[in-house]
Length: 199
Ligand code: ATP
Image (tube, rainbow, N blue to C red; front, top):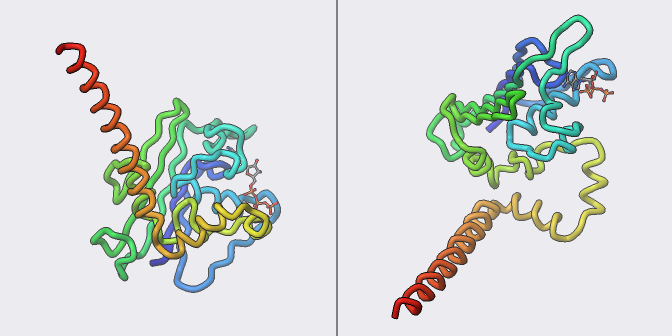
């Protein structure tokens, strides 16, 4: 699996629709300070489901939408699409090419799409779980990330190993099942109370 293309419209400094093609091997993005290099990494994190605005260097989610300049009006929405090569079937969908899109409107409404079909954030998180590419993955190493890994607590380090070992997906499903079980136990208690009252 590798990142083939990224399409950006209205995300941070990218007011015009742009497409960046990546090839196998190494791609370097170079440019002067403030020209938007880190915004590209932010766009990738965002489309993978990043919900923490601080990690995208903003203070509210709306900050990812192009805010306008003296010469240009702000835009109403931001959209980022990642196109991934899946010819080796790393992602559990039977397509050789998979696109993932996230869109956010100024109204706060947001949309997620896999291969142009609307889906939930959870579907995107599940698609990338245990591939290293999810928002908790280790594929994006930002400035200061190594320092933060070295000094982070044992639970966070454990999470990185879990992701690399491919067990995050199962841990998440286990947690979800435990929550459902708890809700079921609560419901049984409630039904038992009602039955007791009626007897
Ligand atoms: P450096 O080399 O200094 O790290 P960089 O090339 O990584 O810089 P970025 O941090 O990606 O640059 O881009 C910063 C630019 O993005 C700033 O000029 C900032 O004004 C602009 N920017 C950020 N958010 C928005 C937004 N919502 N609307 C318009 N411009 C924005």
